[in-house]
Image 1 (cartoon, one colour):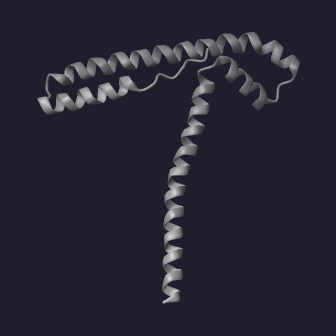
Image 2: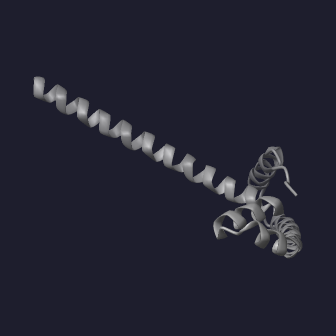
Image 3: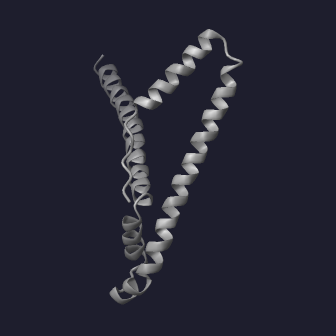
Length: 126
Protein backbone atom coordinates (compact mmCIF):
# COMPACT_ATOMS: atom_id res chain seq x y z
CA UNK A 1 0.00 0.00 0.00
CA UNK A 2 2.80 2.38 0.94
CA UNK A 3 4.72 1.57 -2.26
CA UNK A 4 1.62 2.21 -4.35
CA UNK A 5 1.18 5.68 -2.82
CA UNK A 6 4.81 6.49 -3.52
CA UNK A 7 4.49 5.33 -7.13
CA UNK A 8 1.30 7.39 -7.61
CA UNK A 9 3.01 10.46 -6.14
CA UNK A 10 6.00 10.01 -8.47
CA UNK A 11 3.74 9.57 -11.51
CA UNK A 12 1.71 12.68 -10.59
CA UNK A 13 4.93 14.65 -10.12
CA UNK A 14 6.21 13.53 -13.53
CA UNK A 15 2.94 14.42 -15.24
CA UNK A 16 2.91 17.86 -13.61
CA UNK A 17 6.53 18.36 -14.67
CA UNK A 18 5.75 17.48 -18.29
CA UNK A 19 2.73 19.79 -18.39
CA UNK A 20 4.57 22.71 -16.81
CA UNK A 21 7.60 22.12 -19.03
CA UNK A 22 5.43 22.07 -22.13
CA UNK A 23 3.81 25.42 -21.36
CA UNK A 24 7.00 27.01 -20.09
CA UNK A 25 9.02 26.05 -23.16
CA UNK A 26 6.34 27.51 -25.43
CA UNK A 27 6.35 30.73 -23.46
CA UNK A 28 10.14 30.98 -23.56
CA UNK A 29 10.20 30.40 -27.32
CA UNK A 30 7.54 33.06 -27.82
CA UNK A 31 9.52 35.55 -25.74
CA UNK A 32 12.66 34.87 -27.80
CA UNK A 33 10.74 35.44 -31.02
CA UNK A 34 9.25 38.68 -29.70
CA UNK A 35 12.73 39.98 -28.82
CA UNK A 36 14.00 39.11 -32.30
CA UNK A 37 10.96 40.73 -33.93
CA UNK A 38 11.38 43.89 -31.84
CA UNK A 39 15.04 44.08 -32.81
CA UNK A 40 14.26 43.58 -36.49
CA UNK A 41 11.69 46.38 -36.41
CA UNK A 42 14.12 48.89 -34.94
CA UNK A 43 17.16 49.87 -37.03
CA UNK A 44 18.83 51.30 -33.93
CA UNK A 45 18.39 48.08 -31.96
CA UNK A 46 19.60 46.01 -34.92
CA UNK A 47 22.69 48.22 -35.28
CA UNK A 48 23.46 47.87 -31.57
CA UNK A 49 22.97 44.09 -31.76
CA UNK A 50 25.32 43.78 -34.76
CA UNK A 51 27.93 46.00 -33.13
CA UNK A 52 27.89 43.86 -30.01
CA UNK A 53 27.87 40.53 -31.88
CA UNK A 54 30.72 41.60 -34.19
CA UNK A 55 32.59 43.15 -31.26
CA UNK A 56 33.19 46.37 -33.20
CA UNK A 57 35.53 49.03 -31.89
CA UNK A 58 34.27 52.60 -31.46
CA UNK A 59 36.13 53.63 -34.59
CA UNK A 60 34.58 50.82 -36.60
CA UNK A 61 31.12 51.67 -35.29
CA UNK A 62 31.51 55.31 -36.27
CA UNK A 63 32.84 54.52 -39.74
CA UNK A 64 30.08 52.06 -40.67
CA UNK A 65 27.25 53.76 -38.81
CA UNK A 66 25.96 55.76 -41.83
CA UNK A 67 25.95 52.64 -44.00
CA UNK A 68 24.21 50.54 -41.36
CA UNK A 69 21.65 53.25 -40.64
CA UNK A 70 20.72 53.64 -44.30
CA UNK A 71 20.61 49.90 -45.02
CA UNK A 72 18.75 48.95 -41.84
CA UNK A 73 16.21 51.73 -42.42
CA UNK A 74 15.64 50.47 -45.97
CA UNK A 75 15.36 46.91 -44.65
CA UNK A 76 12.66 48.06 -42.25
CA UNK A 77 10.80 49.87 -45.06
CA UNK A 78 10.93 46.75 -47.24
CA UNK A 79 9.53 44.66 -44.39
CA UNK A 80 6.62 47.08 -43.99
CA UNK A 81 5.94 47.10 -47.74
CA UNK A 82 6.02 43.31 -47.75
CA UNK A 83 3.54 43.09 -44.87
CA UNK A 84 1.24 45.59 -46.59
CA UNK A 85 1.34 43.55 -49.81
CA UNK A 86 0.52 40.35 -47.91
CA UNK A 87 -2.43 42.04 -46.16
CA UNK A 88 -3.74 43.25 -49.52
CA UNK A 89 -3.46 39.79 -51.10
CA UNK A 90 -5.14 38.10 -48.10
CA UNK A 91 -7.99 40.61 -48.19
CA UNK A 92 -8.49 39.93 -51.89
CA UNK A 93 -8.37 36.17 -51.29
CA UNK A 94 -11.01 36.34 -48.56
CA UNK A 95 -13.24 38.54 -50.74
CA UNK A 96 -13.14 35.84 -53.43
CA UNK A 97 -13.64 33.03 -50.91
CA UNK A 98 -16.75 34.74 -49.48
CA UNK A 99 -18.61 34.05 -52.74
CA UNK A 100 -18.27 30.30 -52.22
CA UNK A 101 -19.14 30.08 -48.52
CA UNK A 102 -22.46 29.17 -46.96
CA UNK A 103 -23.95 31.36 -44.18
CA UNK A 104 -22.45 29.24 -41.38
CA UNK A 105 -18.99 29.47 -42.94
CA UNK A 106 -19.39 33.22 -43.50
CA UNK A 107 -20.16 33.63 -39.83
CA UNK A 108 -16.98 31.72 -38.92
CA UNK A 109 -14.97 33.89 -41.31
CA UNK A 110 -16.37 37.06 -39.75
CA UNK A 111 -15.53 35.73 -36.29
CA UNK A 112 -11.94 35.07 -37.43
CA UNK A 113 -11.66 38.58 -38.85
CA UNK A 114 -13.10 40.23 -35.75
CA UNK A 115 -10.62 38.39 -33.53
CA UNK A 116 -7.74 39.53 -35.71
CA UNK A 117 -8.95 43.14 -35.63
CA UNK A 118 -9.35 43.08 -31.84
CA UNK A 119 -5.74 42.00 -31.30
CA UNK A 120 -3.59 44.84 -30.06
CA UNK A 121 -1.30 46.21 -32.71
CA UNK A 122 2.37 45.89 -32.01
CA UNK A 123 4.03 49.29 -31.84
CA UNK A 124 6.58 49.99 -34.54
CA UNK A 125 9.96 50.96 -33.10
CA UNK A 126 11.62 53.01 -35.82
